Length: 474
Ligand SMILES: Nc1nc2c(c(=O)[nH]1)N[C@H]1C(S)=C(S)[C@@H](COP(=O)(O)O)O[C@H]1N2
Ligand SMILES: [Mo]
Image 1 (cartoon, rainbow, N blue to C red):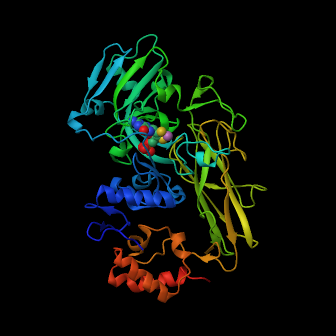
Image 2: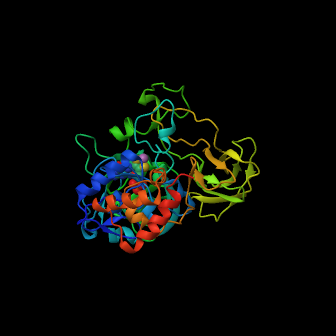
Image 3: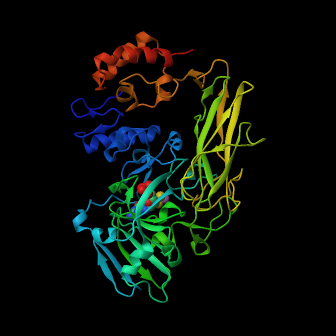
């Protein structure tokens, strides 16, 4: 049951809160939910739904595992990573891109001028370098991403190389290209400024993008224009780009010199490594994630579809093997449509469980370069580039569709009004663990309604039926 402010919440079908809800209220919801590690409506302020809120301000949203069902991640499920406060949106007419430093003719472009360059569309994975950090042992400080600090969009924009040509091209001695994000640092933190090598800048697949999945690039994702260095980790995908400077020496700023550096190989867990001994993070690793079944689900003894996506760093994914016995044996999965060498690739296999009890599902991707996923993760000081094989424990039994001994509703079977009334504030697991009878649920609903839960009279019966069925001891 929800308990939003009675007069302030206006609900939409996906359970999000829109319009008149105060920022404070959103913040409270976000904080409460972040503590409970559950999905909340806080993110709907940015048109998101069902996200794991890692931080409400600055905004950091993780995609739940179910998001890996899509080869192209819908924008409302696309993760968000902001180090700083989001900048005020600029009017398109006022936006300018300044090209400076070691270019032959420094120039300032409008968005119209930028869009006059040849337009390219490319599906590509954006993954935070720290995705999976939460799993490192010993623990590494930083955003505690599990799987969903990643998404794949259809981006559109122009080649950075073509943009640099507008400035007469880069001069001799050019080494790195600096991108300035227009976001507002928190406290005395340094501005988000990152460089990529000139070689990467001139790569035909390195774009400045202004569209995402056919829409103007949303503000929260760096609109109107962000950098897209295809195949590289998210830290180099600078958002809110307004200034580009070509340099003849390595940039000394914090976000290059201290952050996003990797020893280039594993080090003994817990080792401190001098940043000077490390290299900037660049290419992503080959990786895969299982979307369905969800971890810890209860499955009956009948054929079940195992689905997920695999991705890589520009060397295309060639195969995904799946194991249903914790890695003892592997079988090739069917591969979905090829959306390009930087994109997610769906995989799918049908499994008929032959014995009851706990099973561990796994997927392992391989790319054309022969890179694959290991069974044990090498450690690095900042917890970057986690890509070890995922373990998805499931429980097979006659009783079926259970979680931790509790009944679980088949996916997509929520009654009308349930999402708004209940899931906007509570996690499904918490609800079904209540072990209440129908009568007790009736009292519970009354209480929640007094606290402001939006329960419509016409939905009450179906809600009660559902809660009594799934929120009760077997
Ligand atoms: N200006 C700016 N650009 C940025 C960041 C930021 O904080 N400020 N975060 C970076 C990091 S670490 C990641 S993982 C991606 C996340 O992009 P998204 O929020 O569109 O998913 O943006 C990158 N670009
Ligand atoms: Mo990131």
